[in-house]
Amino acid sequence: FIIIIGLSIGLGIANRRNSKAADPEVKVIVKSKPPSKSPTDAPTDPSEDFTWCYEMDEMEALKSERYASIRSLLISSEISTDDEFSNDASYQRKSLCWLAFGDRLQLNASDPFIHQRYVMATIFFGFNEPDTLFNQGWLSGKPECEWKPMVECDGRTDTTVSGLDLQGHNLVGGLPKEVGWLEYVTSLDMSVNLLDTDVSETIGGWSRLEKLRLANNNFETVPSSLRNWTALKHFDISFNEIEGPIPESLTMSTQLVYLDIAVNEFTGTIPSSFGNMTSLNSFYMHRNSLFGSMPGAICALRFGALSHLSVDCTPPGAKVPCDAVCCTACGDYDVDRNPFD
Image 1: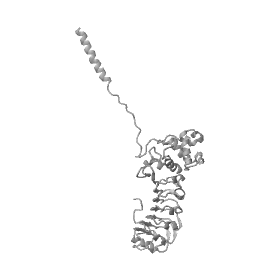
Image 2: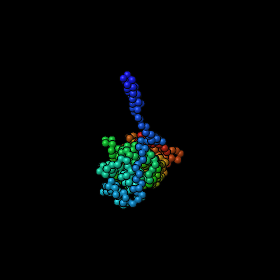
Image 3: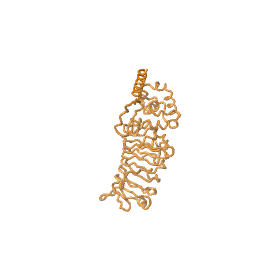
Image 4: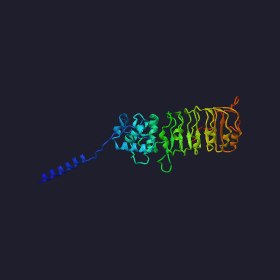
């Protein structure tokens, strides 16, 4: 009897020890993806594959109810056309394919911002898919208002695009026509690119536009819609290839606060009608082919809001003689030339 009790106690202790050895929590270690080579605000996961959508006949894509419904919506809204979507080489087709099949956000066709997201896609595909835009988060799975610093949205709801900063991406040609649909934009910076098409063809109807930077491009004319942008306060078209007399549209933009037409090929005399621009704070005209005297009406503005005025007035051989009381700089800028600081 004593032997049996001893064996029972011994087996119980052994069972408890074996149980403790088998009970520890099992931890599963999952190897994560390596970090990006450089910091980025954009998700590192790529878009879903959608190249098939524009590499084959559109009939395949039209089998998708999602694709067909978004396509129909964009056509009925007159943003793009049936012919443009039918063309498998068009940027409109690629933009629609991305929106329907590649975009990880997957907005429904009924979403009120589906038009805006499509237009933002046309900027990418319309400019031949710039790596610099993609690497900074354009077409990421985030809402387009989080594609910072390139995109700014309204301060009240942070849902409607109000600013685009596309400087320095080697963009060629002109803005995709669909961009004109972004009617709430107040600030557009397209400087340091290779643009040569009048932006008025696309954004001529932007009545809220306040800041427009087109510096360092290949423009040969001032935007034809300049006088229509009555809210415009800052306009920079310096470092371009504009020839001929200063157009009347510039002198008619009396609401401007900042005007930079430096480093072009403007010729002739300086219109005295610039003296009507009583809101001007900064006016740069240097490194052009202007000649004659500085109109007294412009110099009179120096006793008002005008704090910065430049022209080619460096002696000897000054093209436009101008003393220090009137001009603040000769042949160059007198301050940091960025009007948005």
